[in-house]
Image (cartoon, rainbow, N blue to C red; front, side, top):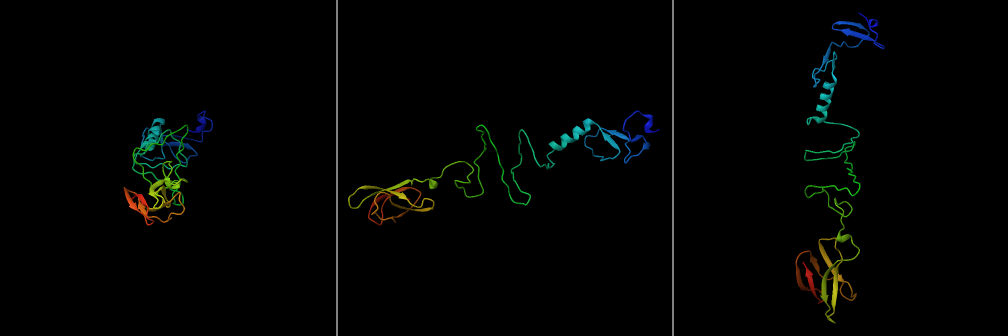
Amino acid sequence: MNAEAFDLSGLQELSLGSNAQGNFGATINEFSTDGTLADNSDTALVTERAIKTYVDGQLGGGQNDLSVNSLTAGSVTITGTAMSTTGVSGTDVNLSIGTQNNGIVTFGAQTQIGITPTAANDIVNKSYVDAQGTPTLQTLSIDDVDLSLKRRVITNASELIQKESAFFDGTDSAEGFEIINGTMQINIDKAGDLVIETT
């Protein structure tokens, strides 16, 4: 039996059972419905359903890794406890989440970041008091000469131990006393002023 006996254009080889004719690299002797492709055979052709079963199993199998250059998906659900991004050189790269039309990125719990938060890199968009141009009112003092009420402000708000100085009267001492964030108490500073101190 030869290929010329069949009116099939472009046919280069033909195999029926063990009787093979023509130029060939592999002899096909089976149509397989095995959706696992476990035999890994060069002599079997699989059916359309077997191919679909195998592909579906690979994409949906939790034991498998998927490596692609680009992925577009309607939704992605992560069932593990970690998600990381790593560049080809081993250094971390940015993970960008784009939203449109007032889209919202929702976190189910309080979210932590592995660095000290600042106004520039915090995970949420907020303003910090330390970064504001107008100083925050912290203390009040009574002048020891004319008994006038003066306002005192923090001069180093970005530090844990903070210093205050007179805001209105330039003749007052610029050093004052040190205060720490906490409860309020009445005190007398080194210039003799009665102040409400935050400690």
